[in-house]
Amino acid sequence: MAVVLVVTSAPPFVEGGHLVIARALEQALRAAGHDASTVTTPSNRFGRQASAYLANWMTDVGQTGNGKRVDQVISLRFPSYAVRHPKHVCWLNHTMREYYDLWDEFSSRLSPQGRLKETVRRTLIRAADSYLLARNVTRLFALSSTVQARLRRWNRVEAEVLHPPAPPRPYRCDGYGDYLFVVSRLAPLKRIDLLLRALALPAAGGVKAVIAGEGEDRARLEGLARDLGVAARVTFAGRIDDQALVDHLARCRAVVFTPKGEDYGFVTVEAFASGKPVVTAVDSGGPRDLVRDAENGFVVEPDPEALARACARLMADPAEAERLGTRGRADTATLTWAGTVDRLILR
Image 1: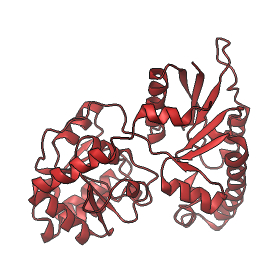
Image 2 (image 1 turned 120 degrees about the vertical axis):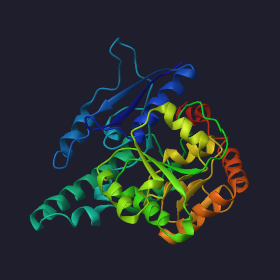
Image 3 (image 1 turned 30 degrees about the vertical axis):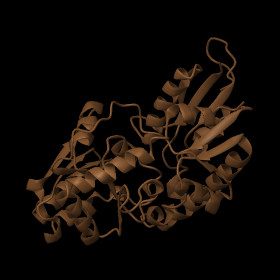
């Protein structure tokens, strides 16, 4: 039995997929007989990231509070991979994306002085990441080929892809109901407006949707639904608990998930675990690792007309939805937390 620390970094009052992974991984490590715990280290706001990296670098992960030696560390997200341990596996969710693939969008909103400051910080953070991910970890995994490609492009570091299984929940299928389901943080990068615009097209033929989640984009999306005349067919469910999530996944016809450049997206494997097909986009990133067009879902161009056609096709044919969803469940059956632990533990 090994003593294993799962380490991730998060700003206060912010939940994210890495925390879902951390909790599920800790549970799986314990189920495998290891003594496991999760440590959350600082992740500061812009302008204070250097101190967060230093705080992680200085964090003592060699011994537990009751004096046990820590045998291994598994880090998940920037800057948690700055912690130091002789047996350190990083299962990378993502680096600080504003300094990588989101730089153009992020920097376009800055003043000239702000852009200059952030350019300097970006250079330093990229250098620190490249060093830490190449020299400070014993083994490096990426949770999708999208994250793997970012590491190769910007940090010149190679990583193995290790897809996370669905979080441990009592998934089931209660049939193929009369609505599409979306669950996501409501933010511009999630492109939920793409679905709203698709529903407004004649090709969508009165398709209904339930959208679960909270975020800074909610008011705009609700206003857009009203402006497009689809508000009567769209339910904004807000934040939902695990039981409501499992219930919607069990009852919906299909799951729509069309973000831009997503790291991974748990909703894909959760939909498949519930026997439901997934509709995603060609540029959605992580979901493309698992969704295969016309085999376990649909992969469409990121435009309303293409999405409307895919959604209408699923709503017109529950038998096809069942065929695609059943294939998705079979495709991801080999993704297990026990198998994940086996790959992450160093021997």
